[in-house]
Length: 380
Image (cartoon, rainbow, N blue to C red):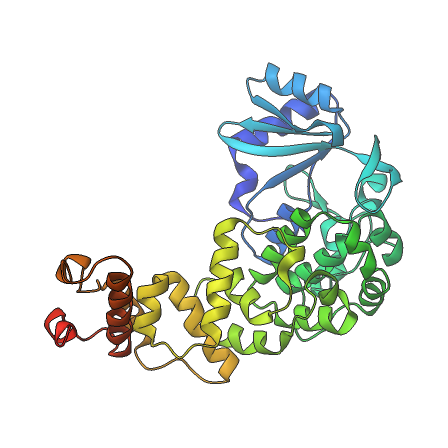
């Protein structure tokens, strides 16, 4: 079996392979680029595994005229930019010590040891510079079946890094067979060790959840997380029932993770959200219980967030969005409230002015943003 993507033949990529191999070292594509190419998915990042040490990789790359960035030197990784193409080059490794959050590694010269420390069999696939696939752990059958399965013993892999619990569900959402269900051994191990997620930083938890909710259809994985107790570990009180209807409704829209997080509900204190994300999430959850028109939501939230709110609200109600909702949200986003403070002064000042503006704004929103200035000011 061979990789077929054009990315393999990039001149910088082939020149980097040539530099390593000319010095007597082995270099192999590994992980996501191999997996995605075989699945027909886009290849975003090029990872290379080698038996050369990071220092040797750096020296050889610099001699060849490439830029070297020590992005993960403590883990054996350097980034080599060759003719404009970045490559993460990592020395073969084996785990020496793990505590569920991080690992102490030692360099290795054996591909088998490097493969054994990876998380899933579909990520333990390698390929040489021509694209010929090397499968030391017999992961190809799992990949072909779109079955996400831990390398070796699932419980052992999870105890090495509890974040792999969330990765298991994310990878199933991204690459798994939706009809085949989740690997039973892996699911049981995730359920048994879900408490270990409490040791993982909020930043890492949030990053994984963001990626999971950004997949095409995370609903089956999220449902399995709920059934296994994993979802309650990271989002207490969350309810996954509205997620599948939302995924159905938002299929034609870009996958926005906050929209999907909003319908899950629950306590998001265990997540690390930016100030803008926290503000948007609060706005979305408020909109779920509102009766504002799409135009009013567009005016108050802006078109992208109004789109999220309208779809999430429809999913929560078990209905479809109103007719022409997208055009109405866009109209609202571009509308301008026709009354200004100057229109009410000097008759009104201070708190009275603010209260009157707010009352007029409420009337304008209730009219679906149709009343003009004269109609609003009548009786003022």
